[in-house]
Length: 250
Figure: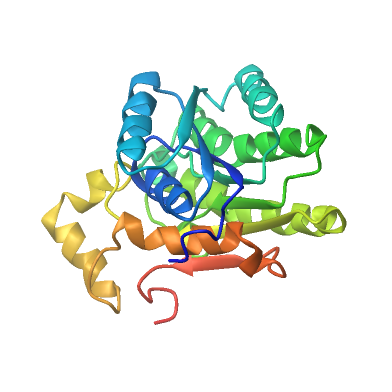
């Protein structure tokens, strides 16, 4: 990867303390970006910042629960003071249950975190972009943005809604030179998928459906994130980039 593709850029990564968020943050850092990681758990954030520092990547951390509008406002104020060039919204939650057993509170929580909070955050970042530096918004989708995910009705609904959100704000913000895209991973082993993939039968079913015959490694998502954040994607907006080992194309 070109090691200066994001040089001089300041990038916010939500859900950046672990899993795919941390992997994308590391890739952006390796491409020269200065990072701000946001997540709920301060100790986990501190550990991730230390891990990145060992790799020579500059990062700071802000603990924030983005399901809380007040904490979103606080985060936006902090990151906007010095200007922000890009954001990767990787924070998300999952809840599995048959649709006819899915509770209202569980449904509302998943939609709040996966759909309402990225809208709220990006809206406030644009409103507070007094330096006019914001150029790229990357919202993290899922296979659930495009296909049915049994026993995950709220997750699929929220990730499908993310596409509509991205396309709409991409059209509205294009005159401001702000690009908005969705990066949709296929099956990677993370905390969100562990309950499914730790079951040998389910893991075999999933990998058997992937043309490449394996799960993705978190580092394999990094290049796609860097591309969307960089000037190499300067004419790409309102799109979904899928990284899934060929699942949707098969």
